[in-house]
Image 1 (cartoon, one colour):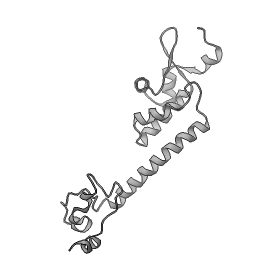
Image 2 (cartoon, rainbow, N blue to C red):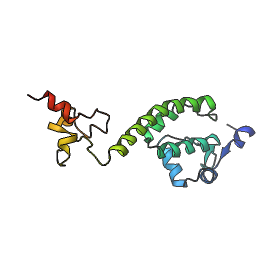
Image 3 (cartoon, rainbow, N blue to C red):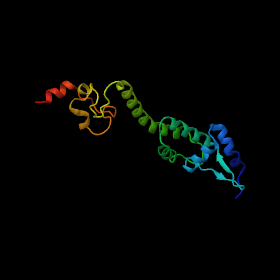
Image 4 (cartoon, rainbow, N blue to C red):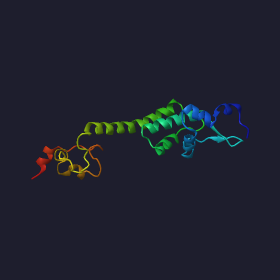
Length: 165
């Protein structure tokens, strides 16, 4: 089926896409195998990407820098239109979804930074100071892992002492 001239103008080669995004051609091929872009093939079998794929792959790069997995990125991109450049409403929806996740990551990192030199609530009781920060392994009672960094409230030594007979 012959392509119309407008469609051809909106198509770019993998080399052009690499140049515009700063990605290696091999990375673009990898993202293709991961379902993040879906180029067409011309009569000679060469990949032809849409210009909107520049924005898609730029988004993938940024989302990865924020710590989002390719699975999560694929899920979000799967909701976007494939044959047109995403508009402001599309990006606002993604931003809204990611904002809550980023806020949670920021809160976790802030707790880590603020408690880096103290107890993380892992239940190990290996530090001399754990008797102050984690008396009677109160953190261990809340579950596995670094409970205080996961958001559990720190149990104060005085309040636990009042509970003891």
